[in-house]
Image (cartoon, rainbow, N blue to C red; front, side):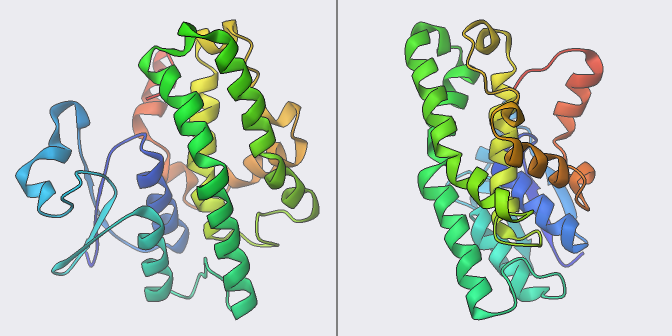
Length: 231
């Protein structure tokens, strides 16, 4: 294989790169790491990424990390299925959408919602969590508006903007379906009820080429077992 991908199941950032690889039909060797065994802190992995984070894409003697940078690299290397557009205007529009999600939307989900729910701190302050849930809906407003006039975030086709946003939103939905989140009535487990355009986009994205292949395997096994931990 020309590429080797190092990833952890459930990492939204690794999932982004897997989606890009699968959507572009680029072959790669898969190396799933076990964070419980601290495989991402091993000397061999730290030699690839001294931050100890996934994803890492190894190609030849080079190792790339940071998910959006890897997607940009793949798009330049395999342009037949473009993710960053074909014209300068499209390119700028897609990067604008990627930046909007990264700068104004993602951290609210991760810091205020997902982390407290995963780490068992959410019920320490239910009112704060409900306030964060309201802010999460506000933060998704620009996406609802964009998806009300086009099927995807940057227009008529799937782009890097959609692939960057999807895993974090799916992580939010999964965390919001935990029993404590339901008990606090956060209302984020069914985003489509209040954001119909976003809900329709999620349904379309779940049918994209490569979605099933990239889906976090331990999420699938937990669903079959009848439990649904969000990690």
